[in-house]
Image 1: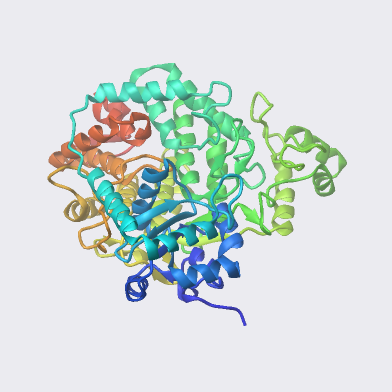
Image 2: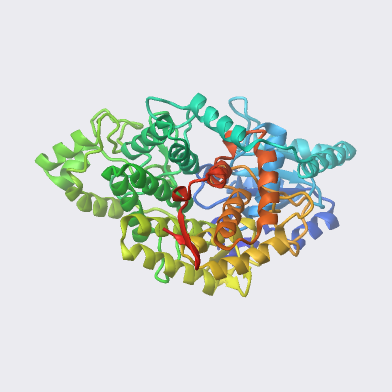
Amino acid sequence: MKYLNRLHNETSPYLIQHAENPVDWYPWGEEAFEKARREDKPVFLSIGYSTCHWCHVMAHESFEDAEAAELLNRHFVPVKVDKEERPDIDSIYMNVCVSLTGSGGWPLTAIMDSDGKPFFAGTYFPKRSRYGMPGLIEILENVNSHWKNNRQRLSDSAEKITAHINARSRKPLKNADSAQLIEQGLNYFKATYDPRYGGFGRAPKFPSPHNLLFLMEAYETHGDRNNLDMAETTLMSMAKGGIFDHIGFGFSRYSTDEKWLAPHFEKMLYDNALLIMAYTRAFELTKNPVYRSVAEKTILYVKREMTNEDGGFYSAEDADSDGVEGKFYVFTPREIISVLGEADGGRFCELYDISESGNFEGENIPNQINHAELDDSLLHLLPKLYEYRKNRNSLHKDDKILTAWNSLMIAALADAHRVFGKAEYLESAKKAAAFIEKNLCEKNSVFTSYRDGKRTDSGVLDDYAFYIYALLKLSDTARAKTLMNKVIADFFDSENGGFFLTGSGAEALITRPKETHDGAIPSGNSVMAMNLLTLNLMTGEYSDVFEKQMKFMASVAAEIPGGHSFFLYALLKSNSTKRENSDYVCDENGCRPK
């Protein structure tokens, strides 16, 4: 009989993946913290998501291991959290990890007292120390020793860390010049831009499509061709690279190299939604058919692989097949020829860089990096390879429906409908919005996640902000205003500006953060700046909240302008005096998307 811990009744695919671990996992909740108080043990918190490669690695090395499990069960209360179901918990302890170590990522590991105050944080750890990296066993033994023999030191550390992250949310606002902020943001991207392959900074390279939306808006507003060139080179390089799936379409999460060749193979809904927006915008500005082709291929991927029968969009597809990262996506020349035949197979291998020597660990990621232009002449051969690949290996799909990410996809489809004129895109967007209304809303409350007939208990700022953004793209101004009133009442800091990540009635955690950084996706606060701008243009309402939000975000963005590109995108729109630069046309009946 297999061992089942307390996670087997959960609906999160990530938690269910750990339901048969020998670790006596608890889901986040009072039961776990009461046990920690009762038995005088620290809480071991592990946060991840179901398509995370290094989460799988740590699970296999440590959480499926009897020795590590015995140590965790004897001296700790182990708690598992799906970061996508509880972004509030993830945000707090990720900020702790970044403050303590200078970096973050998943799996996220934190150890804390029974009040949730952390004194240790990190990301992936191997079971035993290696290559200068501490091992989980050694960390657990060391923490247990300090817990028993030097408790005060851990308590003092927990208090200092908690005070530090609370102080961050109470920083006084500074006045920031909006034109200077935009210039500093543009200078950041110019300084970090890779003129050969596009993208910004060194590998690993992330798509971060909101950076490109900002650059394209800056081009249209200011006329500087360099801004458009940076965006175009990046978009074209990604489209030719292995980060784009040339067989089944859609984009992986990021590239491990500067050429966009070898991705981290998991596919996330949010990346694909934001990239559809960016490629659609690029086509709108340039009329280059390549951008339309990539946007529509990506929509086809989402509709084919990531959409349920009721219209909601799934969250992600895994990087691993049969425990091997990327196995689903790579080919040998022999495989290609066996499927397509000698003549067509040979042509395909030549066009898509598939060789005997390989371009990725002895096998091949299809790509067109060495071609001057993206060549679609062999598209008619893809269905055979698509079916072959699908039958050869399987991929885990995280089939929970997230309001925030679904909203991004709704907005992307609305943009695509507006620019490409295809009615089916608007139909898909409206069907997904209806799914959210039915399954993830209750009157004026919006919830985070839905799966297997169940939804989470509350929603965070991103759920409201992104859904309002989607509703505005669908011209549903009335519903957007209703939810805007709700989010202002429950999330807005009327004294200092900015929106808290959690509502006033949410579970009390050790801090109530305001997320402002535009990382893999825009922050809820940046999107709220755009929403308030749009509603203010449409209705003339919300001017006071809008001004406070822009002042708050400008003050925060002044520290790292390049890390707030979606806010700068909103700021550009706000500063623009040209009505034609707006996504909206206005008349006596109000404003609506073009």
